[in-house]
Image (cartoon, rainbow, N blue to C red; front, side):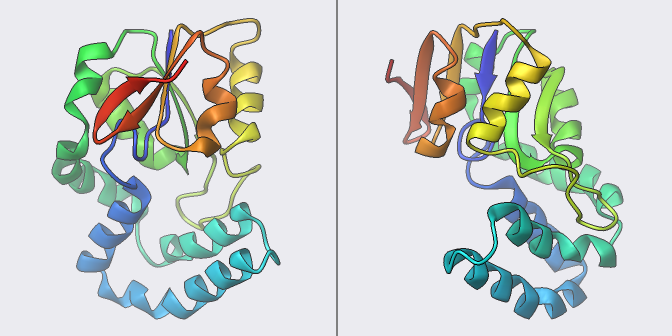
Length: 184
């Protein structure tokens, strides 16, 4: 079993930002929420709110669009951002663990043949979270909940925030300049 982060790992860049920009180009009126989104980012920087609250404010734009209906067109365009190395190392029992919304990643996981997806549970109509943002220790908790007693062979990640879940694996690979580099 391999475990993968998605944004910055399998996907070049942040798919959440890419999806927002895709939606913004097609539904420019969602820009009206930018002051609220910027205020939430500032409150996060100041330590007043946590990442879950900040992202929930960012995802307010889901209330103004049909986010699920936008996904097929988005992934048709954005699947070119899937890193080539992923296809070389993938296996049939891969697990994708991401802070991105589960409903956003589900279509590309189906296309890539990834059957196990652990991601942030976000309502596609309201942007509200059910539970915490799936990052850091929350990734470990969610993995252990879904796969108790399993030790993954390899983990692939791009940032230090992913180290807690990556250290569950025997081997860890950090993505550097678009390629996996073994770190442990």
